[in-house]
Length: 273
Image (cartoon, rainbow, N blue to C red; front, side, top):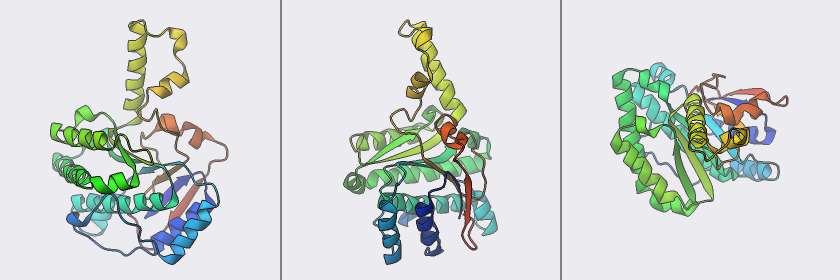
């Protein structure tokens, strides 16, 4: 796994490195994969968690999931298996965030641009999504135990209706949870998000509910998918790329434009997933 981080949290990085180095390389079956897991940190990782919690831990971390197809090609497995392994790594990462006390995580799971891939790959990704959202609904007890609120952000009208229904069920089921927030960007691009925000404002002006002078950055922010969330304090992209790929451009502007921001490259030995 390769992490590119905007803004450097020294203590947090220590745990990421140690956690990665202690992971076992395996190819678990789809049935074993779970969204929410019990903590499996070793004693040294638990020690690092305690050290980190004495300092400032980011409230909101954003992830760009990337490199699954390259992983599949390198390991001579089908693309869908690469995506399945990407979900496995995501589930581990979510557990790390719970252990650290990070209250909100947003993951870039599927871009609108991904619909341009081959129909075979798109169909496989949609089927994998069905399995994962069905599994999420089966994990109701764990979601409630950890107080996880699920939010799926994006243009959901682009998705098959059965997946839309599963997403709606997951969000309704967890809407009152407020301990941890998991935002999954699905059928998403930042440009589409900003376009729909502008459309909402224009509609308000046309209806007479807003004046032109009411249109401010704060108003536009309130029209974004993540309007109820604090902006991310840390951005992590897997695979070694440093592009934002049309992800949360409005929310990440201050983070990536800040003069204190720096790109930190961490690569674990022999793994690029």
